Length: 281
Image (tube, rainbow, N blue to C red; front, top):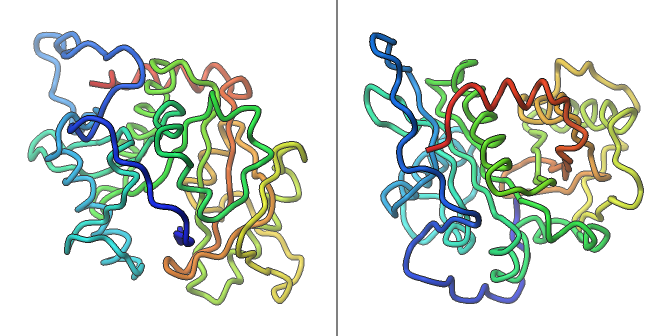
């Protein structure tokens, strides 16, 4: 997730931190049936700066506090950058406390044009994706609070993402999936060998790392799909493909794979399942 030297982003339009790139969803979904138990978690989009700040605080907790990433944000205790003002921020909250326990940052194509680039262009040359850029949502900065990493929260992240794509009407979603290098790169090499054997995108969608992570020192052995990082495993289950070799991100001590998903490749049963889990508020 290293940001290479590039021109500064243009000023974000409007004073609000989050704007809808499609007609806004209904403010309040239908109430839960009388007598139904209150769900433990709810998914929504950030609607104010306080929501965005809560997401940034969680990101800092996970990326810097847990994973030891070197973050350059201007405010202590927050993971923030210039892209936050252009993005929609998906939030999962614990109902009882209101605490944000999971987040995903989404950059729709209209605001990517205003920003002038995608975040992933700090790590990859995305030239070959030009034909689909007008229909591509960039996803990133995904994290879940360590005390809430259970199936219910993860499912709501996917449910919120599915609902977001349905409401904005876009077909493609892409972003980086990180392979940790804490063990010297052995597990990352096995993961890379696994995905390149059966999950590579067509060459027309390959991207080029600015800083290639070289896995050759670790041999050709592949791992099992179950050993892949959960985010990557989830994307592959939905039909995503990996767009070539990983980039090295020394600030996060990871090798980043660029992953591309067309909803046309996703089993409709998965989409129906996730869309049924929760409305996106």
